[in-house]
Image (cartoon, rainbow over all chains, first blue to last red; front, side, top):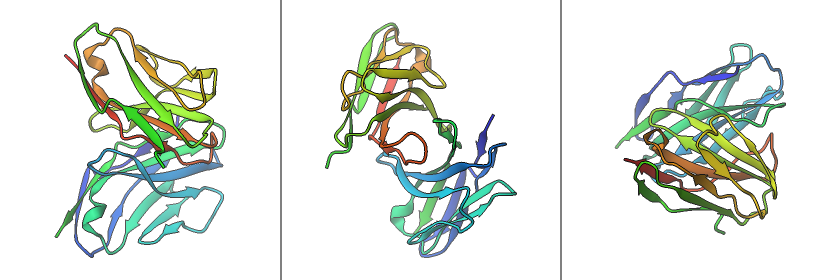
Length: 114
Length: 113
């Protein structure tokens, strides 16, 4: 069965600095999709970035980028120029190409220090 | 531009009571989902629907029921509330089943005492 592991329950970073959140997953599939979702105190889950496993190029969305290492089954999220509004829980999620289910990690709480 | 709307935002139930969590989306998405989020955990899928009249069980369906009479609405029913159902419940929708991000509602915090 597929699993997603986020080994950092909590991370903190100084405003304007860069932080990397870790995510590893276990799968025997070759085609799949990976997502990072953000959950601010308002509770709503917001898609931050996604990566298709068949794409070698790492996805980027403005200040957010990923380091996708398929062989290592690693999918880390880098946030550059951290802002106070980035404070939230961040969840890594996996979905195979043959299964509707999203498999979620336990989340990492990101604290931004002003 | 409402997206996915969930009601209520908060609810306290006594053991054995019943309630329905409402979910509506205005994006004409065929696919809708109910998740629960327990403290310190990721989301677990309760039920999902691929279109009006079609529903199926997810990972943790016991104690819940759903219906999908229209494309827009996907209510979740708790028949006999138990303390183990204390959680935050999220409804989500997507235009496709696989490679498609989910659009989430703001969640319902349910406490069963």
